[in-house]
Length: 107
Image (cartoon, rainbow, N blue to C red; front, side, top):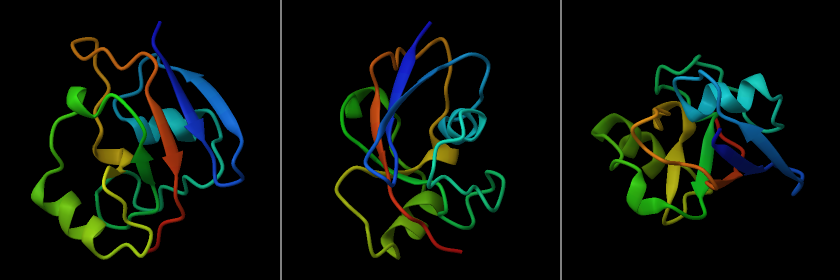
């Protein structure tokens, strides 16, 4: 099984094994990762699931227009910022070893 490493808002590294979660946000919620609030439940409308992708950038699809619009308003925006609710997890894309840093989002 593929494993994702989260660097939570406290700076702690926590690994989570991908099972049947549709998106990175759900994986974080299922593993109680601090800093992923997921207030909009994955509707791409709040940015409380903001992460910065540390590696494997080339394996992820580009952010869509709605996601990019929200990211552009984030004070903690970085080059590889993503909303974890918009990062799909599937068997077709090998994300084993993915590392993401959780950033505090906003509503």
